[in-house]
Length: 362
Ligand code: KG4
Ligand code: ZN
Image (cartoon, rainbow, N blue to C red; front, side, top):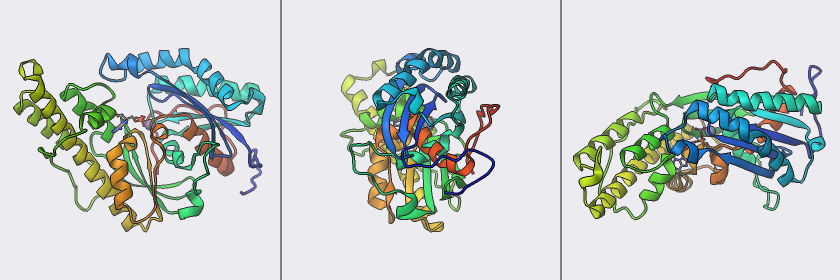
């Protein structure tokens, strides 16, 4: 830990940070001790509200955050068995995400930090997804600290509803963007594919479930973009659309007999999942090899996918650090974990920090 004379530096192994996340459709709060020990993790999901529209409606999301934020934070403190006086810093996602949704969390966190007289930190949501790999529940044996074992550099795949980024992490707060999607994010592609197949929202878990028991009868293309670590998912999505049209399950599946509809949806779901996972795993391994990574970190909602997790573990020549599925999707714990390391780098942020909907990493 380094001393700086331009901001407060917190020492001690048991610093408790309250992490708040409102960038999209989950109002989430969590207390994390020492950047690694997860004392509570409360998530008020708006999934059911947005499901009726087939996607997240920004204004609806902002208004629901206003309703949910105070009770969610109260519950996070209660579950952690701590009071407001025990909180050493308040951290919140300030980007990327939906502007109106981010504003709710940022204003709440700022006011709370000010009233408690503790540091406030604005955290990059994408960086937060990486730090989920540092977390463990208090009752579990702590996993190795990725910074110590396997150590830096780490190659991180962040795959969510809005991003698909390959990032080289050379140290805490040191990132280099190696590749990103040129069109749809992986999660967005899952969500659109699910819509074509008549499945629910969010599409990722629905496609995963619908794929179970598939025989592998169908195959969809992969966009390798050879020589680049970028991704492209719009081609596979269009190929899926054409196959669904040819099988007459899209746009109107009502004339298709139920058993045939089930089979087509199962096989096309599996083919789509295979295609996305295949490219994600190969590109991540290529990046790890090219940059001499000592470990691979996965983060973001898509990395909750069971096939992706299995394939990555099987194929990785270095340790693959994969958070539990509940910590891959949006949560406040990852924000608190990231903030612990940010505290050491810069102490805290000024109270005039704004939301940054287009914030990137590296
Ligand atoms: O990280 P996240 O919770 O929110 C954003 O930051 O966007 O990611 C949400 C995305 C959605 O597109 C969702 O369909 C996808 O993650 N997702 C999955 C799975 N669980 C969530 N995709 C594939 N398989 C899953 N099991
Ligand atoms: Zn996310």
